[in-house]
Image 1 (cartoon, rainbow, N blue to C red):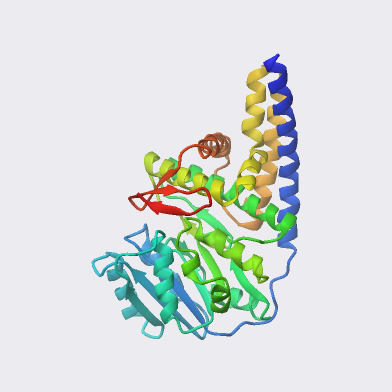
Image 2 (tube, one colour):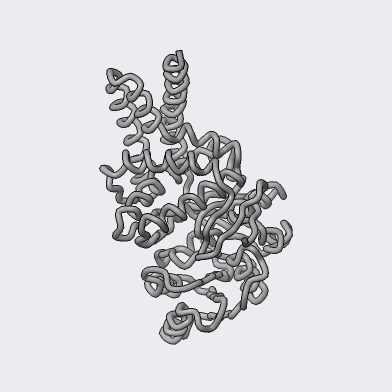
Length: 374
């Protein structure tokens, strides 16, 4: 009896997941159909860079921001203390690019639960411009980043923009698996949300926003207790009536070469945070996983293996459109079925537990998406 019930449930879920895969192709094509603004943006920009330690290839990542083909911009850096090894790299680059206005802030120990938000808040106090590009240390860009995002804000209507990102893996298999999922699955969810309800949130390691918008939603002080500060920044901005968009500029997110334990901690942190930021959206992620669902169906009925093959073919086709057309990403396709199964397991794990580890500190998550240091 239970087999029949499980078969029915799984079959319905697989059908829904197939529909989702096909709709993600439509969402990707609709995103690609939006023309890049022809109007050239030229207003001054402040780049905010919170740093903590030496990420892989940190110097190369930061150098790309110094080499922007843009007339008026400044770069602000923030570290917790002067002994941070990132300081030496910043000073080296400042010496090479004397034509770029820069500031280096030593913030001290953060009083906020979210240390990154405290660094951003300190940099915002001294930033000279209204248009802000907030970018993590593991991001690499081309010289036209500022020209592109400034053009998207040139009409004065934009409030917040999320830059989609192409994950670049390190050498470990765990990093390569995660990059496969990020380039084929994560962006698809953003594109679907954009198509169905519009951009009512912000995600990702590079966000563009106006200072005036941040002030209108209560500033970084309102974000300091949230783990997913990027998500709620966009959410609060949309609720306040400001325009939130998915930028046409794709950044590179160099995710490093984490081992199994660090990769698992990162994935659990992401899953548990997402579940609290968007509980119904997190539950709906079941429809983003057609292959694991079809695999479970085949376990119950081995003779149904053609269903598994068909589902995987649709999954690969949809993933190809998203990864190659939207992100221009190189995907190790043979890793995709393994990543799909691993991602499914972490999705289930995300329903359990309330603690996370972030930069070697342990935190407890609250039900509303806020968190506190243990």
